[in-house]
Length: 272
Image (cartoon, rainbow, N blue to C red; front, side, top):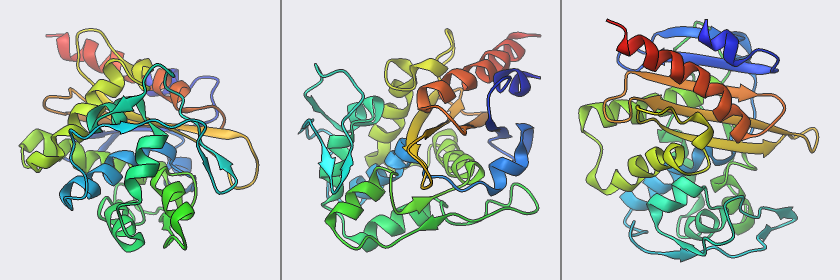
């Protein structure tokens, strides 16, 4: 099974769901995916961007500078993308997962607006994908610093892998049906470019467009990082949505694990 191969030698969980039915069709350590709460890192950025765009507080074409070093409160949040990228529009900010872009743009939102956007995505509610599961936690930011860190998925929010799977399934359904708001086009394009050339390129499979996002964050208990990848394929009309959670590692590692699943999916689609 592709999911088991993808997770071989890795501590964590993975799940694959049918976009249309929501049924989980393959999984590894499903209990962990349903109960482990972890900071989601940059996987929340598409939902922050949708909140900004739909509220009219950000124009997708506006270019914002990437400022380094980036320190928010006592947390160093420098971007991982190449330093040659000095300014970005909304699509590029998703593709390159620019922390500076999102930290700056998020200050245009009030705390309640940010929390509402994250809750609308389903990041603090049970998905119904399994019979029993935990629910995430989203805090009301107490100040500007905490609002920025929450918008980066690094503080003030914890989710399960299944909640991320459910949130990205909603995106996939919007893409599939064409019901997504036109203003959100940059979100969907950015997710495709994230896998095409950006920070989630480790999940890329030649011959099939995939949309997805990585996330890396430190745990509350220690400085060690965990990683997420969550995305869907084919990007034009999604059929499956995949989440990978690695207890140790980063989002790039999780994307590489997800690639094993996408390769198998692409192979099966081509088989008569």
